[in-house]
Image (cartoon, rainbow, N blue to C red; front, side):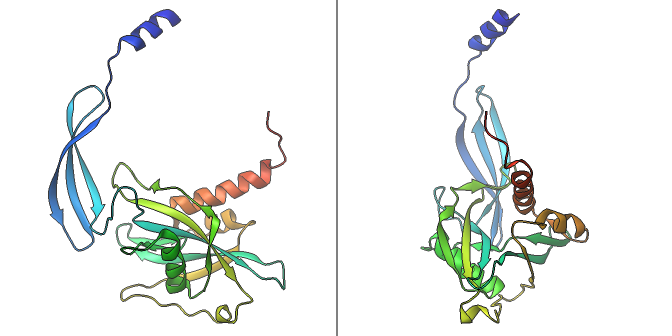
Length: 220
């Protein structure tokens, strides 16, 4: 049986999928709907609809940044993070997320993260050079949006962070929740039944719980 399966697999002819052409369906200020005409691995011609940002600057650059705030003080053992709540029309409800925002033209992801942190939360911070992700996809079956995750360190002893003041754009209504970073994050998300957590945030919280639960297990 194993031999026949191997033979069948080796006889299957595959090729690299290719993008043949892209048709524009419609465009608004921020988004465009396109139909991708492509050839799949078996040589079959297919179509795929995709939403793309009109602000996209290239496949090798992030469209947006997601920020993990790290709030610390040298005067105490505080280690907190900040979550943002806002109404998301596509979902028809309020979501719970990390701060995030679009990367402006000729702006690095790190610079964008610090700027968006200041605008959405009011806190001044610095991008952590050791805690930055590669380019990541969000919902690849729906959109070609690429993001980068950046941790931003916030010094609570900085006088500018004593009374943080948001700098929101017109139409933005963002509420902040400050929570302990390492413990209780998942529990808090589970208890906020009236707000839907974004998948990335919940995965982060779940990962922290797994680390705390199994962190003392040695590798094989």
